[in-house]
Length: 167
Image (cartoon, rainbow, N blue to C red; front, side, top):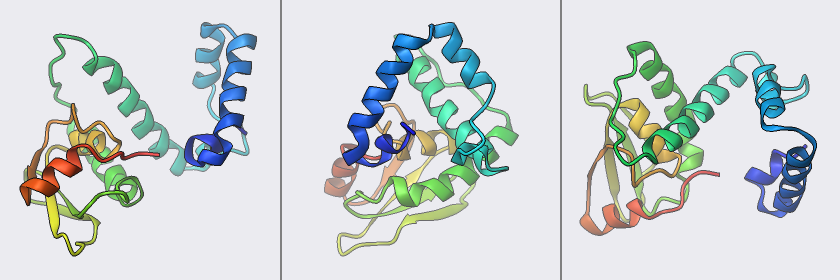
């Protein structure tokens, strides 16, 4: 049970220890094979539907981390089906992922569809507009590489760009 340390700081030492044990015990290829075979039976990732959505979003974010770290990376067009899945995921995850935001947050797609990620505060709200994939990256703490437009008070927008999101 190493996963909880990612979300619960008090358990982070356990996570670090378990990851070090796995690195010592398994080769890179063996770890990749373990990921390919899927989660253990008693994992949140093994629940039908939930695991697929969590894994898809998690793998997407980390795949983009690798892509966007390259000097000449270019945006890519995802199929509508993938964008729709990411829109569904970000609407569910954003409420938890953006709880540290200094203001209210509205996620908006280019076609005008919206979802409130965080209710307005006394500070007001900021609207984040972009494709679902870009909104996912923004809400998962990748504000610096997410290709989105931010609309709101300039001070709030600047604070939002540097807020620590994610788990």
